[in-house]
Length: 412
Image (cartoon, rainbow, N blue to C red; front, side, top):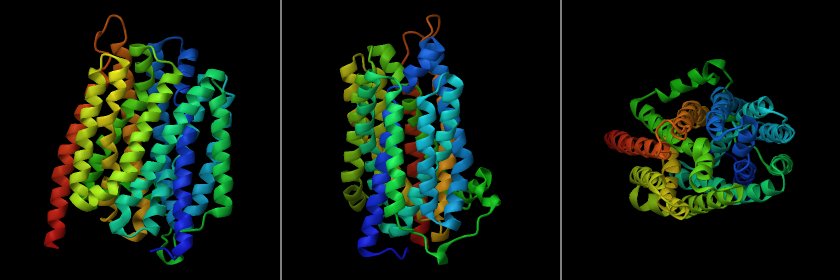
């Protein structure tokens, strides 16, 4: 465990939660305006579907390469410098996107954002440093709640600022991430003691080397597969949500921002208030599976919704999804040593990034095809049904793997 104790530990935890809130707030601000800006450059909704999928894939590909590097660097040099450098880089990236004159500049901005957002792996490793294993599901739930809090305010602010100017949200996001950097510079203590550090090695830091950790035993590999399926399904939101809502219901950035704020508020309530008590009563495995199943039901309801109001109401069962990520993270952290937490989080982010490359391309292509007048009409919601099936598969696999892992622990 970290030498951070008492009041310093509480301050450190508060900082990580605030960083998570501000980082996701800045990301959420640009969500309502980035796809319409892409559509403005591209000239059509179908083209925007393809290009938005490519942009999300570029972001994820950068994370795939850089997340294990960030995690391994933090294992050697500490969590603090990695978090601070990432915050500074993200602020500069939003400035670049604010002045982008064409799609090529936006593409470069998405790549840089993927590199700098790799600090999320370090934030999770920081939590593992300062939290005992039995408290990690709740701790990760608090991080998830902070992420969700950013999505409550971010899309609303983005929708409001987007009505003023499509570039205003990017400038505002740059300011927020700059504040994050300054706040961390003066407040954040280091969480990883020298005795728990591990020498940086490219063998572990390259994405394929980091993935070897996940193959160290079958249960960890199985949980990593659940992680992949979860993130694959989740990217239906980043790839087609905004474009679909505009195409199907005629929503603009303001309506999209309000609904995404509802998503964030529900997720914040689930992860911040329900995860801890639910895990204490039912255990990580049952809560994880229930969350995946609830998310599948919610996404299927979104695809079936004939009106914008019913589409928004489908966010309530979908919010149960928030139970799955912190419990999955908790199950995985128990299967590696304290010295490998940064490497594990980097490997997890690499898995998420592989899903982030494949999923937006897939869902973007499905959406672009279904809105073409000569194609699959009237099934523009096909992407949501596919995502629901993927989550159902994740729930079944998660139950089997986690049950096997529990049996192995009982025997040991």
